[in-house]
Each structure stands twice: as structure tokens, then as C-alpha cells.
Image (cartoon, rainbow, N blue to C red; front, side, top):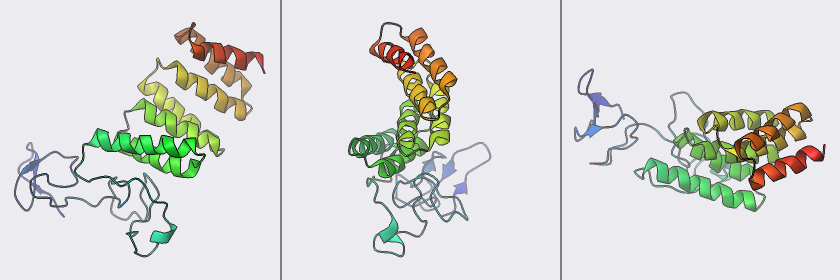
Length: 202
């Protein structure tokens, strides 16, 4: 599984067929050689020494029918050679379906996998934050909301949801500040109207 380097300033090469590789590849697209260990469920990279996947929480040695497999919530199966963005979107879509069915823990696993695959997508962070709020993981949710805002500071909907999370935490001043930002960003939007109603209710 070790990757052979072709030079200090050159791409990595597959140890089996010597095809040049991008550094984020887990498998060689030419011959299928596995280049690094990935999670059996969400395909996120696994670092040496990890007992569990940092993206979805699956045990490192969990395989279909293997030890510990019965304790793992199955995630959407994805192809290891699939396009990164498409795989992330598949996890996000599955997470949204689970969320709509009030299966929040499973939705969090899927949204976390999407974030792990494409951490620069603000929507994935927002969806993860909303799901975390549903199970009372407010501090983690706030962190995800702030990352989403850093990536997409003009999204009024993110501020609206952040305000609701602050309200649940009884941090009302911060909730109002978030909702006021909705008015600044999109004063004539449905989100702004909802933010005004939320402020009037506290």
C-alpha cells in the first residue's frame, strides 16, 4: 500500500503500474491498486493508529459480517473510484432523507462523511450543524455554522438557523445578532421575515 514517489517535485506513482497519481487518490484509476486505507463505509482516509473513522465513527476493522459490523449503522455505499464531489453529494442527499425521517444520528453520519470528502462546501457544514442541533449538540453545531459562514458569508439561511441554535442555548443576544444579519443580507427575503418573527417572539 506504500506509494512510490517519482521525484521531489513530481506526482506520486502507482507502485504496481507506475501510473501518475493525484495526491488525494485512494486507488489507482489505471489498475485499481489500493494506495491507502479508507473507511469501509464512507471512504474517508484512515490514519495509522486510528481505531475509528474520524468522518463517520465506523470501527476501523468493521466489515460486512466482520467483528463489530452489527454495531455500525450502514452508510450509503459509494464507489471508491467515484468522483469526489459526486460521492459527497450522495452522502448529503442520503443525510437529508434521513433527517426528514427524524433519523438524526444517522443523518449526522452522512453529513459528516460529506464534509470529510468536500470540506469546502458550506451547505454540507450547515446541514451537519442543523442535524447536530436536533440532538442537542449545540456547541458542535455552532462550530459548523461558523465554518459554513466562513466559506459562504452571504448565505442568509445559515444565519437564520444559527439564530435558532443560539435561542435553544438561551444565548438570546447572539440569536438576535444572527437574525439581524439575515435582515442585512436579504432584507426582502422569506428568511428575513422569519427572522423578524423570531425576534418578535423573544
